[in-house]
View 1 (tube, rainbow, N blue to C red):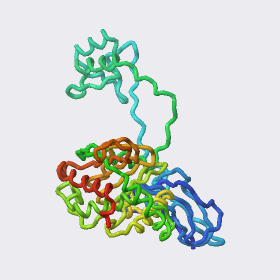
View 2 (spheres, rainbow, N blue to C red):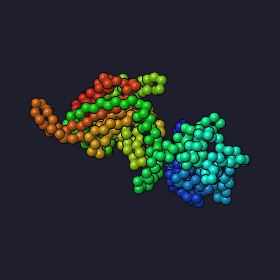
View 3 (tube, helix red, strand yellow):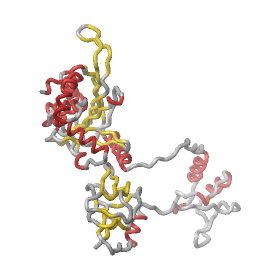
View 4 (cartoon, one colour):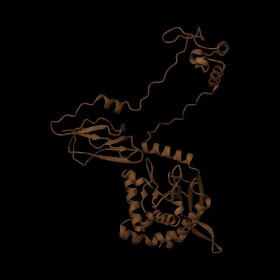
Length: 404
């Protein structure tokens, strides 16, 4: 019996997915559990496995096409079987989804008579006031190309003036040379969410400069220990994740969200980590980060980043964050103002560690310094509360031994 391969529903909000690549072609043998094709949703790339063993047949949608959830995209057949024909309903749903009717086109009337046109089934004159007709003749406007705003669609004086103003507009300059790039579902979602965040969430920013001498020294001292226990390199991001989780534990008033009708206090400390990908940005979440050791955070961070680069982060791993950490220091960025990841109330941005002359102990010395910037949702938090939280992060950066 033939087996249907269905475009799966990855999460509750998903209504369609784009087929990115077919790993097999028609006629290829497949085994149950083998990857057959990959799809792209709003946030992740998902590998779809074969539900049965057999021969792949009747691939109904090519790579690059968006397909509604639940659509049959192919079949797996046993020897001697044939795939059922595609129904008209499936063709319409798969091939015609999203098409809109062609726009209406208004034809010009004969140049001999700009004051009247014939309706498709008769000889009805254009409804226009005498003044409108006169103004149209004087300004060489074709009434058949205008829509009336008066009673019963009658063309009146203001319609003539509007048409004249429209005619006087300078022509739209041609776009500069270039090519249109395909818009991935991830990039489209990022664009939509960032517009919504910046439009509806009243951001304000707090920034401090922290002494990073002890932070760098701690990383160097713990590097061999973490590497021997995990096999992974300890990064500054791992230490910053630990610091952020501890600061949230010390300041539970930060661990809140705006729900649209009120404020929700979160009971767990889940820290999101912004991960940049070639096609966009995702924020996987480390659950109960305050209860993780530094070695555990290093392992979880490495696993999430690796799977994010492979498109294997699950939707549920990107929900429920308390606060997001975004670090661009490794790219040479000194300081930046991040955009909050709703419904979180804050996002912490960290820049690179830079040696610079500063006043220290009554003398000018060369010290390692870094910038910390906290973006805050002003609907739920105020400057004093945010300042105390950022001061705690600064304190832990400058004295990481207090994490013990």
